[in-house]
Amino acid sequence: MPKKVRELKQMLRKAGFIQKPGKGSHTNWVHPFYLGKVTVSGKDGADAKRYQEKEVLKAIQDVERKQNNGKN
Image 1 (tube, rainbow, N blue to C red):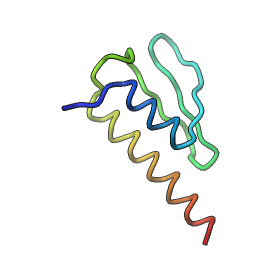
Image 2 (image 1 turned 180 degrees about the horizontal axis):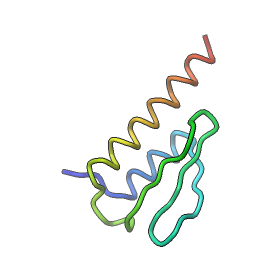
Image 3 (image 1 turned 90 degrees about the horizontal axis):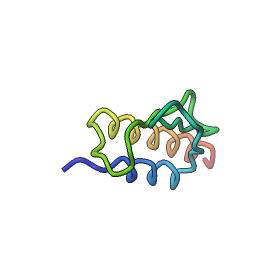
């Protein structure tokens, strides 16, 4: 069962990403340890697309990896 768009946004917030406005239903998310941005589109109650879930999970993993490397 796909996640809802609001769940993806919640995951990004928890990982430390900051929301930037986009056009229409798009929101852009940035993080100091992540190059570029993650764009999430759709209304909060809509089912997220599989590629959106993958992009969000990859971005969160990249940030966690960089944060852990900085601690070592």
